[in-house]
Length: 84
Image (tube, rainbow, N blue to C red; front, side, top):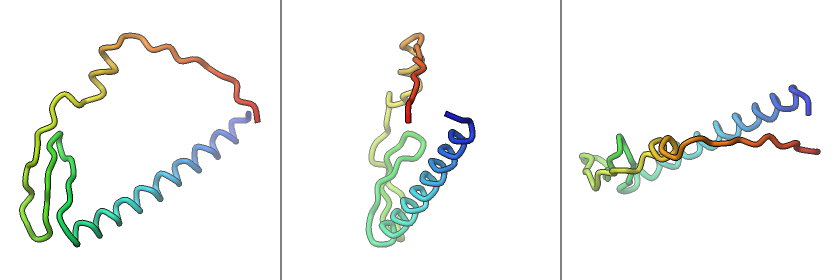
């Protein structure tokens, strides 16, 4: 596998992620205008209705995956050959 192939694949994945983010943002804006939505901000589940104040639904505790990864110790990453 050449480095150029890997760079091209990385660019394609980045483009796909950007398009998906735009679509999700547009869907969220549309849903926000039509009715109440739930979203997470700073580990707090919030409900917001159009033209209304945000309402705290629940505080999310103990849900940070970074702490779980750190506590597990050493990770071994195996390199694998990918054939076309």
